[in-house]
Image 1 (cartoon, rainbow, N blue to C red):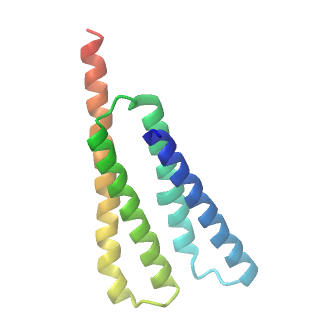
Image 2: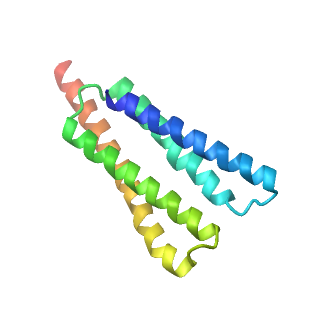
Length: 132
């Protein structure tokens, strides 16, 4: 399975989890997990979906090693971020404990984005060189 499809499956999974949390919040009238819900849908669903589209349209011949590293960094960081937010906003773990973990996870998501930028630039340079 290509990275485009892997990212699509991750994106759809995050969408289902985010929608489920949203439905739960609506039914319970407890919107304490609003920030978690938004991050699941943005960092999880939207970013993963966009990465899948990028892989499909521009990175079909990208380095398998770099693609795997980028996907692992993004997905692990996103899961840690989302779990940390859920625990913090659910008042299960205090902010003093969750904060540093959320900071590291946020940096991981940023590193994933920087790796994606590097892959797009590398693919653009390779395409430019091959068309000369």
